[in-house]
Amino acid sequence: MKTWPHSYELRLQVALSPRGDLILTSRIKNKNADGKPFQFTFAYHTYFSVSDISEVRVEGLDTLDYHDNLQSKIRCTEQGDAVVFESEVDRIYLSAPPKIVTIDHEKKRTFVLRKKELPDVVVWNPWDRKAKAMPDFGAEEYKCMLCVGAARIEKPITLRPGEEWQGRQEISPVPSSYSSGLLDPEMIQQMQRI
Image 1: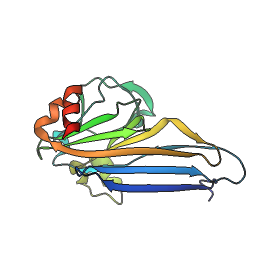
Image 2: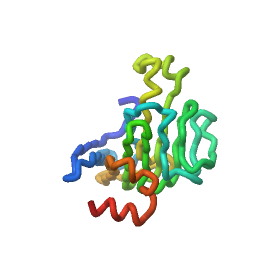
Image 3: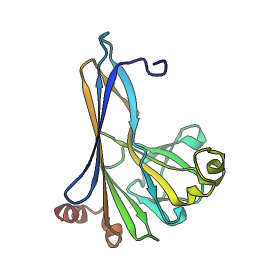
Image 4: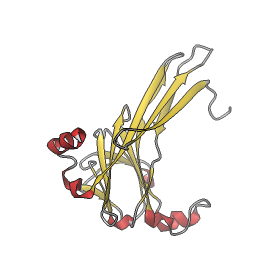
């Protein structure tokens, strides 16, 4: 393949935990017979159906640095206590905590994203102008979707022949009444005991 000239094996395991959490585990193995290592980046593109993008917030990314893909990938620092949506957003948050919370106030629905070996987080919504220009995206669909996914982008993964890398993302629905306490360590421990 011209765009990816390396021999590799990719395995994606999709599972539900006993509590109903969605668990995505990806394994990538370098199968190069030429003895050469390769580098790659990785991101899950988890699209959430939301009621109204202007009523959604992503918590757990405050004070983090991010690359703003709308501004030539310049490095910025998140100033708000949560990411909210009033226009197009296309960011890669760096060195994010292992748990991120997406809150949809109108649907009274919250998702906790847990991640392992994926230090970064992608947050994306195309907003109206870009949505209209995308052939596989409805002109108004930006209002009811949000991409929040675990990633490893800033520091690529290097695999020597025979080596394997594994990354994991787990998505847990929780009652919205717990939303504001989800990042409190005591509340997280209580939720994990359920």
